[in-house]
Image 1 (tube, helix red, strand yellow):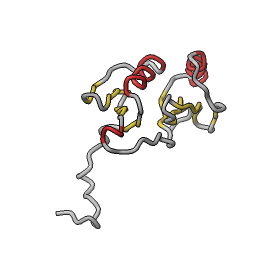
Image 2 (cartoon, rainbow, N blue to C red):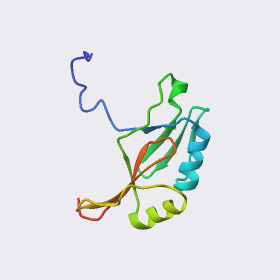
Image 3 (cartoon, rainbow, N blue to C red):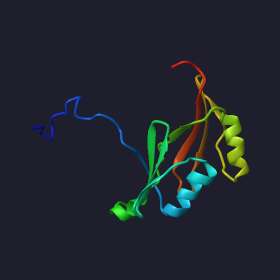
Image 4 (cartoon, rainbow, N blue to C red):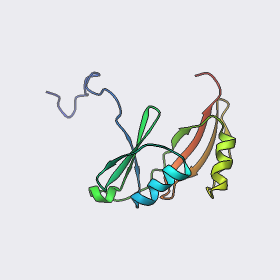
Length: 130
């Protein structure tokens, strides 16, 4: 039996099932992620959340207040992989999305923006080998 002060064995945690994105209005956020960002597929959790499978990661929109957790937007960004950051940014700007300046880190291009609830997202493309 593991004690609270003892780390879990490496075999205990086998993966990450989803990353939660807190939202205030599930229907409005679902429209944004589906229509504006173009993310397909969803798996509803009754009326409290909705999952989007994006490559190897599941994004879970969650109305946290329905779980008894106060709403607070994620300030740590979720990087969404795209082939061309400049082109994807231009399409989203045409849809009314505002961006910070586009960045080139020396290994990747990035464009930072926010969803309607203030969660930080990044359009991201790594162009240098890992």
